[in-house]
Amino acid sequence: MANNIRIKRLNHAFMEEISMILMEEVRDEDLKFVTITGCDITNDLSYAKVYFTVLDKDKKEKVLEDINNAASFIRGKLSERIEIRHTPELKFIYDDSIEYRSEEHTSELQSQRDIS
Image 1 (tube, one colour):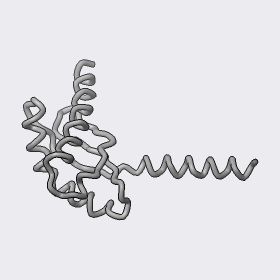
Image 2 (image 1 turned 180 degrees about the vertical axis):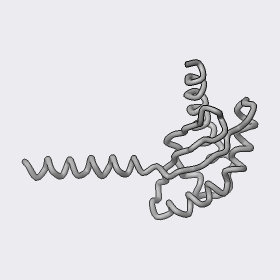
Image 3 (image 1 turned 90 degrees about the vertical axis):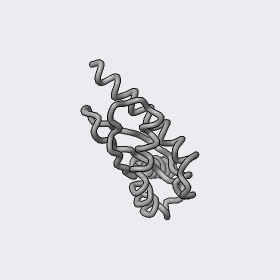
Image 4 (image 1 turned 120 degrees about the horizontal axis):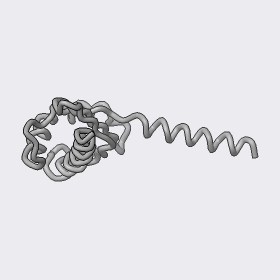
């Protein structure tokens, strides 16, 4: 139970710190417009899946490649900011759930409009 609370705290701390690192320390301008939407750290603290979205959907693939290439740099900066014995290996994943929810909401509004 206590380990579960620790993982939740680390997930939140990772989201905040990765966002700050992207805004302040990464040189790639495309990565400055990335929004971190979630983080899932494994129980053994060896891996972390970091979910993100971008403002410009046309650059999604390029940003995905660039951010995963910068993962080791971001991991190093995280180890300086968060006191943890072993900083998990980072894997960045584009978060499609926001797009799905917005499309679902749009179609729901459209169907309500058609009914009226």
